[in-house]
Length: 195
Image (cartoon, rainbow, N blue to C red; front, side):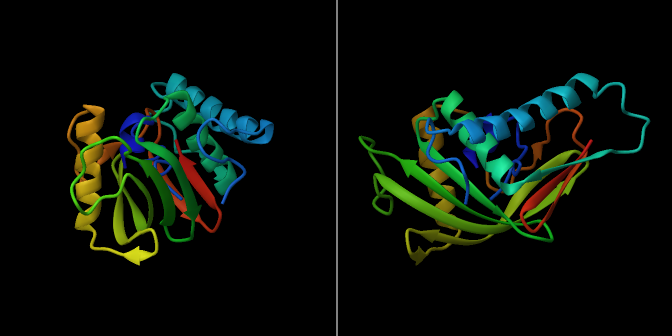
């Protein structure tokens, strides 16, 4: 979730959201992964640059593969030198369903008793969009191999926000899509971005 705040409030907060890939942990991008990431970045830059001129036109659509999206996420994590979230991988399913893995490194921090210094969070949810905004409605959450209540994610987000000294966020917040992006829909292994 923290990725979305920093990553152009999502492409997602799936794209922005979203959810195994050619890209590994931040900083370990292969040449293919870098190429895939740059495809997404160029698209977002072009849409943002032309967003004022497209208001009256019907929306256009651009599709990205799950691999391209994950490469973009790995690229952004490496570029932003994310301190807590070291990895985010998304599996894109049909009907706006997303599954993902987040690797968090909270070593050296004072943590609530339920949290470990290094954690793998696995989640499943549905991407919701409305009027140029998006959020991920979480349905399941696992800490390593154990299913945990969704409120644990609120605790993790709270701890990460305090460590990062960023603005407070809620899992239930809606986040503005990047300029020019009107909607996001998923199919098995792909994400469709309407602009």
